[in-house]
Each structure stands twice: as structure tokens, then as C-alpha cells.
Picture 1 (tube, rainbow, N blue to C red):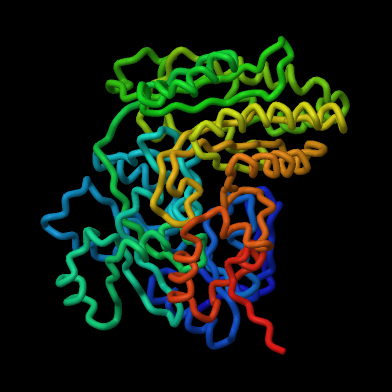
Picture 2: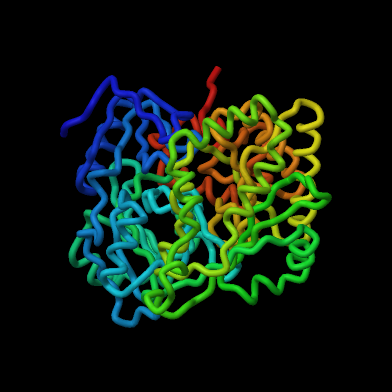
Length: 489
């Protein structure tokens, strides 16, 4: 099988890079199994990367690296074998390297759509699932919670189809087709561990997702003071009244109170019935995001006159206000050209048990402290999204409806990483759990991750079962404490 050597892999921003021993681009699940067996024989590690959208080190490997381009077919060629009595909604099986946008295109052509998604469609489906990437709306979990089945290559090059106990695969048909070559595991415990596996359980090759019929969304963006938004969050009615509710805010109060841009999205009639100006976002903002010098101009302003940050953030939010934008669902979910700005972020999950309100106000305090002590300012609005609780053991939303706090910084802004670290440390006081795919300072010391996740031991038990010798270990698993290295005297 062909491979590349002496090649550096880096993520899209360039803040994470690695020089793996070999880079493979497998095209079938059998080729993936062969690579895993070879890695074990050579006593090296192996991991798959996605689109490189992650800002954390979760995808890095020092051994064999698998690129996703060869496993990106939509739909996947792997047979479904769905039971005739399956009671779920429509299903779509796709290969793990498929980008979300390719899945959206396929579903749209077939009168279907994703139930929910995040704000970017360039990620691979395996990357999104493995890190519990999410959209917003307390009726919906992350994309991993819509997975009904997945095919994964584990240690020894063994292929496993893993599903919940009531999974959709017809066991008799599956076993008649594959015989002893592959195993179907329909077990809630194993599935809840593998669903958010962060690449540690094996190489995911195909995924079956529950989807729904095609639909349109109406997006409304309004500016409100924090006092009103705070009252709405305490009341909780905004989550019941809207299919999708999220907001961005500036932590500064140049006019006496912090302002928030509130976004709601709800089911709408066909967008083609709306005037043309209601079928697009603010085109000037989109053009500014696409202009390559925009972030450099902002950074120059913030570096020479940091005190401009509060006013710049305020203007940025006001420019996004719009009374109506209606389009097919996946176009509304995608935040557009803003995805291409050179930026990075940390995202912290805080339980929606009252602590989430105090967590936002603690962000105000940290931002003010850093502005006063070191003239370090937030360079981008901060986002709040709301996600339903999950049964996946290492999902940030495990066992609690969750407010996700995305702390975004423009690349090159002085002091930006230090400010993110300060937010992260402060938010641990409110039960904060960092997003696996975004910048974080988690370590395995003092049982820190184990304290965050009550089912950590159960997750580790399944990991040990599927990867007993650590072929899927990485610098990330060692940093966070997900490896089982042993010291022998």
C-alpha cells in the first residue's frame, strides 16, 4: 500500500503540526485494518485525522497517520442490513471521512436533512462525532447523539460494527454476509464509550446517522442587553419557544451594560416564497469576512490601541442584526464566510443548573481583570450555545443539559492565548469541561479528567478492551491521561 514519508501534517490554522513516520490514504475498511495490523507489528501508533479543523492536539500522532480523503463516499458502500422493524427515523450511512457539506448535499438531493449541526460544514463526520461537536437547542444533543451505528477498526485490525442495544442492524443478515470476519456489537455500554472516543478506540470508517425530512429555517438576530438575556436564561422559556437559541456577547460594557446578539431559528415555509433580501445574510459582513486583510487590520488596531476592543466588538455585533433570513436548514446552520477568518477558540461546557449564569458573569470579570492588568482584550465576540444532555461517557454534555461557551480569538492578537487559559481556569469553578477538539490545558495529573467525567472508568474499560496495547495512543492521550503507560523498575 502506498504511503508518504518525511511529510509534515498541520491543521488548517497551523497551530498544531506533526511529522508522522508515514502518511496513508486508505480507500477501504480492509486497507485500514491492514495498516492497523502493520502498525502493531512495527510497534508504532496509528491515528486518523479529519479536516484539520480542530485547534487541539487531539488528532496528532507520531506513528502512522491516516488521511480521510479516500474514505469519504456518500453514501458509504458498506451494506446497511437495517431491520424491517427499525422504529427510528430515516437513516444515512456515510464514510467517516465525508465532509458535513457533502452529507448535506446528498441528503438535500434525496429530500432529507440533518436534524441539527454546528456552524461549519467543512469538518469530517468522524471528527465531529469523536469530539461531541454540536449545534444549539436544548431539544438536541451533539451530532454524536444522532449516530445509530458505526463501523470501526480496533486493535488487531478487527472490524466491529457497534450500536446501542436496540440498534438498527439485522444481526442474522449481518452475520450471514460477514461470517466470522466481522463482529456486530449491540451493547449500550460499549456504544456510549465509543460514541465520543476522541480517536482512542480505533479508526472509525463508516457512520450511520438518523436524519429527517428536508426543511427550511427562519433565523432572526436581535441585540439585547445582558439584563434581559440573563432574565430569559433564568426563566428558561426561550429554550422551549425556539428550536434553536444561541447568542454572542462582548464581555465589555462601554455604555454601562454588556450587549448580546441573540439568534433564534425556527421551522419556516419554503424560502423561495420570501423576498430575495430575506434569503441572504448581511452581504457587507460576508464580504468583510472574505477580505484577507480584515483580521490583520483588526490586529493592528488592537495592538496599537487595545482600548478600542470594546467598541469594535460592539460594532461587530450590531452589523449582524437582521430581522429575517430564511433558507434550507444546512445553509442557515452554517455561519458562512466567518469560518474562514484566521481564528482559534477554546470552548467550555457548563451545566445548565444555575451555574451557567454565574459563569457568564465570571467571564465579564476575567476580561476586565486582563484589560486592567495587562491591556489584554478579547478580540472576538464570545458565543453561547445550549445542548441537550448525552449518554456518551466522554461527551462534554454527559448527564446534564449544557451551555457551551465558545471563547474565540483572532490569530495574532497579543495575549489571546493567555486570556483563553484564564477563562478556562475560571470556568472550572462552575463544573466546566473543555471541548476535546478546541484549545485546552487539560492534563492527566491529580485525576483531573476522572473527576470531570463520572463514567471515566467505564470509558477506560472499553478503551482497554478495544486497544489493549495502545496502538491508538498519541501525544494527546498521554497529556490528558487516556493512555496506560507503565513504568517497570
